[in-house]
Length: 315
Image (cartoon, rainbow, N blue to C red; front, side):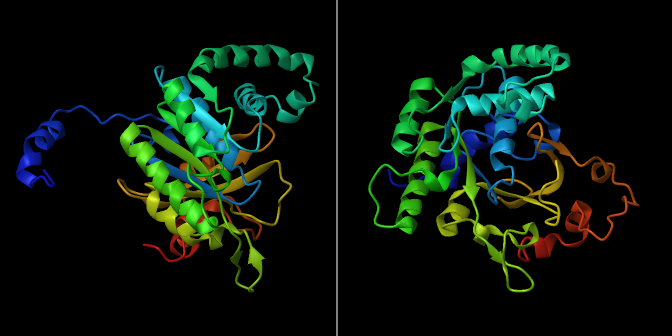
């Protein structure tokens, strides 16, 4: 049979709607991210400039999902970092011990108890976290995911992962990769969470820039297939480009696309010392009088006053 009518679908659909059973899915750990539906068959992209925190945010979501969903299994394919480096980031975020101290093996005696306690928390979910041995090829990643019985496959980052078949150029390669990902998500019933690189945009002076307020769906490298193939696209960027060396930066996670739900932008603080994102407290409190910005652009400026311009005019 080549088709089904609405009547054919009605019985099962209506029974499901009225069943009071929520659809399957997984929370990312922090309620501030609950509007992002990580679920079987969904493809979610997090785009951002290089060094902007994409891997850290993805890593935080992985740890949060494993800690709050006791049956969930996740496979990570990271083309830039070894698995042990990602585990160290988890440890730093959970223990509040600076990542640089952990990496240099120079943890202060006063921090060792917290480090040990956090490592113990990680051990409760490490058997449900796996890392692909060959993260550069999607067919190898898909096989690893099937072997591990993964519910979620993480790709970091998507533009550096090759599709199953050979391609004649970057655009064809990305078209094939997104098509392969869609089949993997739909037929395999798994979720895909991917970090994505973005291209520079032109600022108000015509200069090449990664400034957050100039990012849009079109900023995704080889954006055509990515923006149409993904179910959710989130763009992560600093709201103040003038202080690139700050240990704690104000960020905006902008929900550029949401195929099945309502998009929601979130103001975040990123503590780079421990690779942790938290909601920006004064914005979350919805204070009518935000702290003085000293002439700098704040997350609230974007969320309340410039949301359309930041996202390239989308409504």
